[in-house]
Image (cartoon, rainbow, N blue to C red):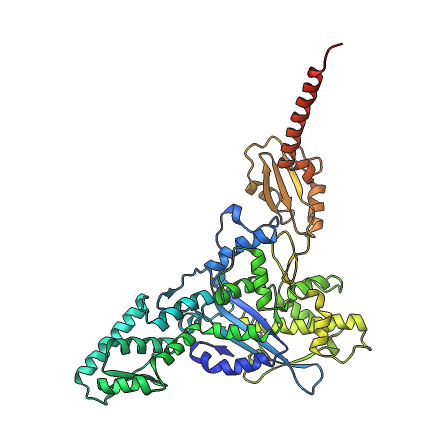
Length: 531
C-alpha cells in the first residue's frame, strides 16, 4: 500500500491501531543520497573509531533527505500457532515548507540512478510527499502560528497566495452577501494556510474546507464576528489543524516511539541517523548523546544484518551480498528449520508483494527484514532445542533467543563492526594494522599506495610519516596475503604495526627521554669530585 500526503491523515487512526497491536515493526528507508563528497581526510575509513565515524556520517545525513519510508507491521494471529500477518506500507515524504520553514537538501546522482533502476516514483515523492519536521522545527512553527507572528516566505507559496487573493478579491466586487465560490485543487495543510491568509486579508469573507476544496463565502462584518466567536471552526482550532497537518509523518513517528515496539532493520545505522535528524532533533555533536537518544526512542533494536552475519559461516550457507539473497537462502532447502518455521501472510490491501518481488522498494524491504527476523529466530531456537523439542512458539520466545543481538547495529567501514546502543561498544575484532615502509620512492601519496595494493585486496591507507603508511583491511586473509606477497620486496617493506615501536609520538617521547637521560648522566659524571 502506497501512502502520500492526500491519504495520510485519514490513515493515521488505522496505522496507530496496527502499531499498538503489533509484535514488532520492520523498517526500511530510501534516501536522496548516502555519502557526501567529503574531502580525503574526512572520508569514512576502517581506521575510524565509532565516534569519528559518527561525526563524518553526520554531515551526510544533514545534507540529504528521506524520500520514502517503508514499514511492515508484524502481528501474531490469535489462536493460530506461529502465524503472523504483515501490513506493509510505503510512505512518500517531502520536507515541510511552511512559513519560515524551507529545508534544503541535495541529490546524489548515483542514488537517483539506483532508485530509477528499481522504478522509484519521483512524482509521488516530489508532488505528493507527506510533510514532516523535527521537534526543533515544530517549536518554531508552533510559536509563530499561535502568536500570529506568521507569514508566507517561500516564493511558490507567495505566488499561489497572490493568485488566490486576486481571484477572491475580483469575485467579492461582484458578489452579494451570502454568495460563495470554491477554490479547487488546494489540499493538506496548504488549504489551512490559504484560509489563514484570506481571513487575515479580507474582513468580509468566511472560509470552510470541503472535499472539493476551500469554499469562500461573502459575509457581513457582524456575521464574521459571530462566526469567529461561536463557530467550532474558530481560528485557534484550525491553527492547531495547520500545525497537525504541517507535522505530517512526524505525528506517526511519535506514535511509533510511544508504542515502544521492537524496531527491525537490515544494516539500519543510516536509517537511525535519519530518523533522529528528521523527526526527533538535529543530530548532536556527541556520539554518546546520539546513542542515548536513540535508545530512549527505540529501546529494542534488531539489525538482521548483524544477526545473519554472525551465524552465516557457522551454518555453511552460501555467501550473500544483500537482504533479498538472505531471504532466499532462509526460504530454501538449505535452511534445516524451513518446514517448521513461522507462517507469514500479507494483510488484505497489502497483497502487492505476494507474487512479485520489488527489491529496494522500502515497504518490500521492510517486509523482508521482518520475515528474515522471524526465520532466523526460529533457526536459532531450532539449533538450541532440536527439531523435536522446540517449546510452544511465540514472539517473546523468539525475542529471548535473539537477546545477544538486541541493540547491536551493524557498522560499515569503521574500526568496530557494530555499535551497541544499550552500553559500551565492543572492542575491535579487525585484522592487525600493517605498516608500509617505502624506500627510494620519494613523494609517494596515499592514492598511489592504494593503487599499488588494490589488485590484492580492499583496504584503507593512512599516512604515518613521510615514508611510512598504515594499511588496514577487514579480512584476516587479506592481511596475510599482503605480508606474504611483499616479503623481501626491495622498495615496499610490509610488517605488523606495533604502537610502542612505530608510533611517531612514542618515538618522540623515547628520543626526549634518551636525550634527558644522556644529559643527566653527563652532568653526574662531570659533577663528580676528582680523586
